[in-house]
Length: 299
Image 1 (cartoon, rainbow, N blue to C red):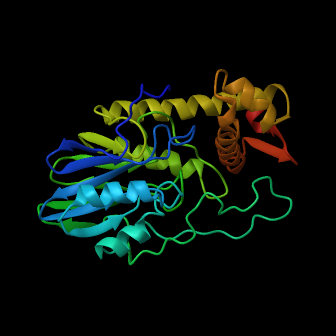
Image 2 (image 1 turned 90 degrees about the horizontal axis):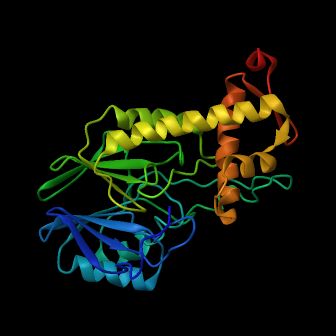
């Protein structure tokens, strides 16, 4: 999806509803769209900050200005990719607020023969929560309650946050307003991602506020389409490897026609996530970097 025309509201406070405001960070890219959106939940009596974003002085200053004199009751991260959580520590230092939310996640070196270098490279390895939330745990403030919803898949530690008072769901990168989410092994898991989408589809949230892209006013319709899209991708992969055993690098250009080539590596990671899921289900097999359908699937 093409980005909206500039100027973008970088650093400005956008009031979305009485309990929700948004501040856009200064980190646009092919992977982050116009940038990471930080949400402020609450009012002058107390605020929770969701996804404080990158450790960028301009964005931190914008957040502090937006918060004003309101006490910050919690700084909550949906996950620990480096465009979401690094500002948590300096914001906590500036406000005295606790960091409450997703679990810490780091991974060891993926090994000299890996094609992804350090497996923890995309993650904020310095993230240190004061309190880790499990599914169903809550953050409370004056006039609001946020309930954590475990939604692994994009990352294993991903949480969404449901605002009980208004029916809003803060979806981080699990469901975005501009693109489907990248599911990148070794931490990203396609089976988990599909299960998390099914979990959201069974809910009755009024609106989604994603970390990237526009708000989603018809959430169940979008989630249904996302589930269908992933199933279509799975069928597409199976057709390709039934015809010819091939590496992921050959599949991506066939599957993602018109995609910005800068995004091909990310698309390849999602293809790998699908293939790993198919392998676990006995429908695909690999020899080195070459993937093929199993005899069971071809029958």
